[in-house]
Length: 387
Image (cartoon, rainbow, N blue to C red):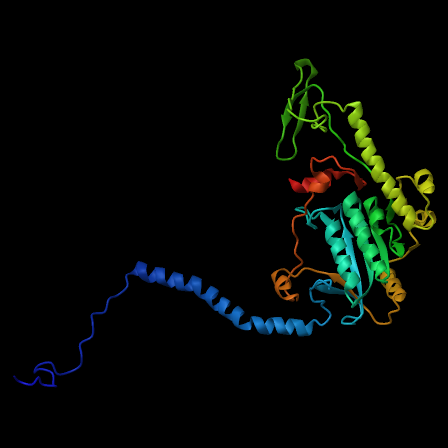
């Protein structure tokens, strides 16, 4: 048998022939070009972020030495407000803005902010344990809110005082009703000239009642009812178990027993409110609150005269007074801030992040439940943010 030759057979010398080249059609070329153009920035951007993320986090953590790292014993990320930026001793400024609720804080659709009493209580309790926080200033600008939310903030103030840390309150525009409840235990209350304080009272309602209703319009902007006595009225049938389970039904009047029950709830909350203020404000007794002060709102000078506040002054005066009370010569006023995802993950606030603005939970103020409120003013504008 012949041995195969290691050389190519005759006639096959020369370069190996290339496969036939296929050209893309214009639609194929266009589709690939668009796909590359769209995806390339995302791919390159993701690679850049992943590669630079450790350096970014490290640089921010080193550069913002005044930021307090989140933990159970720390107040979380903060922003410099006044004083000496980067000083070790912190005067913590805690905003109490808008209605005080028992749900989550946040900014409403039209800018109406709220303050969660429970969230604020937890923040103040952490501040009581934070060794860097030496004093706290409550920045008050609130018409009040729920009894439970206001009482929770007062509990947080009590925790700070138990830890030996001065707590001052400053009223910029108004601190009414639940705002007075929340700030009453403060060591000192300073009110801006032109600001208002007061409304020590409790309210429930209003409870709507209709007669001769012929139509109900639940439109986009709230609607209303149409009343035409000549055509009769609308009967609403509610099947319940338990006496007065449909309390608040707008199509029937309150019974005598129901009205008495609601009045008892309001009186009970008012008694707690009055006792709380009298216990924490030296110039105010329960008799003086019920008889002389009442539920009126007072301007700055009258508020100081009555004992609802201690002195008039600016927010900077409040910062300085709190620092002096803590014996500080060099201090940094910082306000809690939210830096979004990076703050949650790493406890640092990146320079380009914005304060988060969740939609406020107004159920405790605007819900159908019949609960006493330490609130002054009209809830209509506040509750319209829920629509």
